Amino acid sequence: MAGSRCSRKVRLTAFIAIFFAFFATGSSTAQVPLLMWSSDGLPPLALPAAGHIISNDQLTAYLTTALGSGPHTVLLFLQDKLSKDDFTVFGGVFGNKQDSAFQNLEAAVQTSSSSVTLPALEWSGSSAILALLQEKLGVSPLLVDADTLSHLSINTSVSNLLLINLPYCTGLHKSCKEVLHNNDEIIGEVLGIMKAKNVPYTAIYTGLQPSRVISEMSVSDQSVGRSLLQAIGPDVRPIMFNVSGSPCIMLWAQNLNISLSSSSAWIDLATETPSLTGSMCNSSNSVLVLNYSSGYILSFAMSQRFYPVSARNWFTLDSVQLQFNGLTASFIGRRGIYAPAEYSFHCQSVNSFQDALLVPNNTNQNTTQWRLKFIDFQIQGFGLANGTNFSYANDCAGFFTPGIWMGLLTSLLMLLIFVYGLHMIMQLNTMDRFDDPKGPSISVPQSE
Ligand SMILES: *[C@@H]1O[C@H](CO)[C@@H](O)[C@H](O)[C@H]1NC(C)=O
Ligand SMILES: *[C@@H]1O[C@H](CO)[C@@H](O)[C@H](O)[C@H]1NC(C)=O
Ligand SMILES: *[C@@H]1O[C@H](CO)[C@@H](O)[C@H](O)[C@H]1NC(C)=O
Ligand SMILES: *[C@@H]1O[C@H](CO)[C@@H](O)[C@H](O)[C@H]1NC(C)=O
Ligand SMILES: *[C@@H]1O[C@H](CO)[C@@H](O)[C@H](O)[C@H]1NC(C)=O
Ligand SMILES: *[C@@H]1O[C@H](CO)[C@@H](O)[C@H](O)[C@H]1NC(C)=O
Image (cartoon, rainbow, N blue to C red; front, side, top):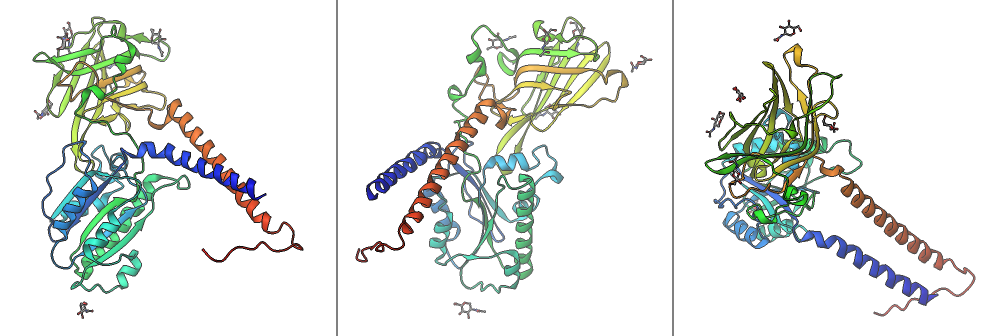
């Protein structure tokens, strides 16, 4: 009996080891963002180059200068999980401030006298920030919420570390955005209380762990970037618009299907070679005009903008226009057609009628029937300076590619087996104690 229990334990330990080894492989590239702002000034920090990961040592050095002399009151907003993609996805990336889940946070960062944004802070299995702050300030953290904070009297002649825990969305929540929005309300409330109390503070917003573990590619190293075209073969040529000899916009699609009425057949423009007159590129806007000899003109307008909160430039496909016979139908790129500016955007299917990524924006009644359907579509309008290959592709499919579903289900299955196994073992151990109530009780040696 003891022998079988022992071997079961060995098996369990081995299983746990394998399980964690499996997850640990991804964590070497994991990182969380950190935002820090202060009501009374922070020392400057040279903005890290895009893609550069700040190590814990660098953070320690920075906190030592920032919290060096005198007492400080530090508010640590520690969210269960956070990744910089959260800012992009839920932060009103299309310039719509009303739409952002981080309105109070953005306002606080903007109105504070100084702030520091670390988009990528090294994260190796656990968050070091709380221990670090505890060490720098020499005080234990005080867990507060807005309600207790409002009744708390803060002695500013000593250092204070106030910890505000914030949840992240789990499968149980309706909407991730709602959870982040609620957190943002809490941040707003806490900062309001601090202001009302007239207590100077330094605030930090970060995550206990990353919300997504994406293996971040080095953006500067183009050769690492996956090129879908390389995978397809050397004989496919993307459409390239060159400025002074080097490409500045590239587009590739298996089909560029258009239809002028629901009854007429699809016309595939990808079979024709267009002229590109009228296309343009500058640092903030790119327009690709495909002028086909059959009379159709298809144009793609892209722009890129810097979003401070995610510390990088993002490009969006703003609109697609189809012109024919002097009529124009225009389609607006909806949420989803965007990528980091150094990346390309890829989508297996972009269309203007089902789960539409392109939304018709027609004022002309004569073009309401016009439809677009692009298959295996890839476009890049910025950051092509060094090559004739697409950069790493940001895929519109996101979490819904079959590969990801398969991975997700496999992990879930493994987790289920693991939990089931654990449950069984605990059940068995419990049962052992009641094996034979009339027999002698199991004696456990008390000494170590
Ligand atoms: C604040 O803390 C200092 C140092 O511990 C103490 O001398 C002072 O009395 C405290 N002030 C208040 C208002 O509690
Ligand atoms: C654009 O530039 C690339 C690389 O320099 C070259 O291969 C391609 O032929 C050029 N295309 C045109 C239309 O000039
Ligand atoms: C696109 O149009 C071509 C030519 O009409 C047609 O053969 C092809 O099936 C169409 N593709 C889709 C996905 O509709
Ligand atoms: C780029 O082109 C757009 C559209 O022509 C123009 O509005 C914008 O001012 C230009 N930007 C720069 C930096 O030249
Ligand atoms: C498209 O090409 C035709 C003929 O090559 C030309 O007359 C027309 O102006 C072009 N249209 C645009 C918008 O460049
Ligand atoms: C739209 O179509 C109607 C009839 O088919 C025509 O009379 C009208 O001129 C068209 N409008 C435009 C802007 O071409």
